[in-house]
Length: 137
Image (cartoon, rainbow, N blue to C red):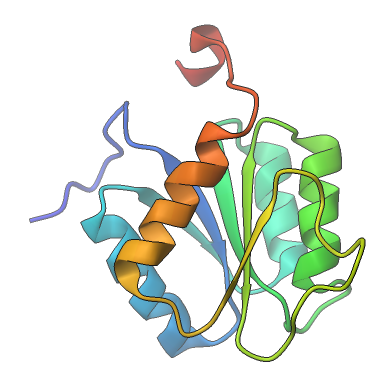
């Protein structure tokens, strides 16, 4: 049985996906890999969550979503305002053009095997500046 409360050392991933079945599948994959998952259905909702939470270690965002910005714009916003947060962008329809991805962000095409998704998240978290221990407590 999965715990209802986050384990202190469990990395927090903000998952931004508008398709409920895709989001549910990704949540299962991430929880199985022992991530704590916070969900948003679009970049606007995710942006509000980022403003109120200091424990997010990485974002996993789709590109094509409803709302005021797509996943590329959201990824650039995250990198600008939260440089310590890892950024993984995924899409089954769109590929990034020059300038779409911020520095140290990773892009993967859907469909993605679960192990590849988890490995990419671990990698983007490892390539961003780390928070101090005081920020994680």
